[in-house]
Image (cartoon, rainbow, N blue to C red):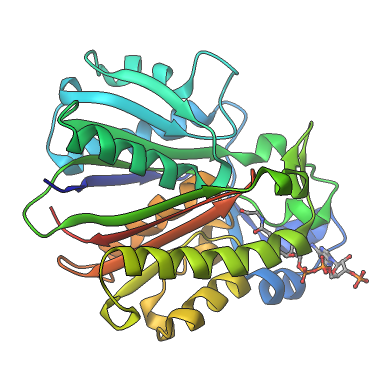
Length: 310
Ligand code: UT7
């Protein structure tokens, strides 16, 4: 029995902050941000909106897309490094708000790779028969842990949420393979004290190497070759990192997801948000072989190879 994606949804806050807006606030330029990162704008939540609000709305959309009821969900996993509070978890908060009264709830902390960790965990519970449906949400309100005086990080990140209902899908479809990994020795390169602290160059080098390796690994584990891959959805951290992964797989530009220009880096939310936009735009279709790869603070990484469709 194969677990797969049976419903997806997203939520981004309405306020858009453009590179031109940032030029007025700090010593940076639209030109630098675009050419070094690919980012043109990001969505930023207001003070009355926290991670649980974004997660809730993305979850509502995913549950509706799946055509199930909140009561049908057995487990809620929320991947976030920006919970409203250390506890209760965001997953418990949305469990109540959704009326998912039969669901267990816990948060997953694996930074930008968190959604990958959540989906792989969900897959185990679905395929073991323990839960029929698992809701996985990647959500961040990174704006609350960003130092708006630090141009090295403030221009990179955005707020948002993406969600998926994981359940049993039809024969031949679903999650074909996965990879998860961590290297805690690199934790010093990307962490939060009060604000996000990052050694951009070190994270960049790690990301280029790891995204390529994870993509190749999940393709091989699925018993496929690069030629079988229809579409790549890399974590939207930096266009140059994404391009390196795409070139390593030998895919043309139109076969890689690119949403970073609209949302910036939304950490755990970037992959599911991209998935929602790409399915809506017809870039991901039933029976396509798609590869999802993410990396982040920890350092952590994760990949999935999926035959898309319910
Ligand atoms: O989700 C995972 C989290 N993070 C990442 O994936 C980030 C990975 N790293 C990166 O994406 C890139 O390293 C950055 C985009 C963060 C930086 O790009 P870079 O090409 O590695 O630039 P750099 O840090 O080497 O800085 C180059 C120059 C420096 O000036 P000097 O020393 O050459 O005079 C910086 O001070 O660019 C300067 N700079 C800026 N200039 C204008 C750094 N940030 C900015 C800025 N605006 N926002």
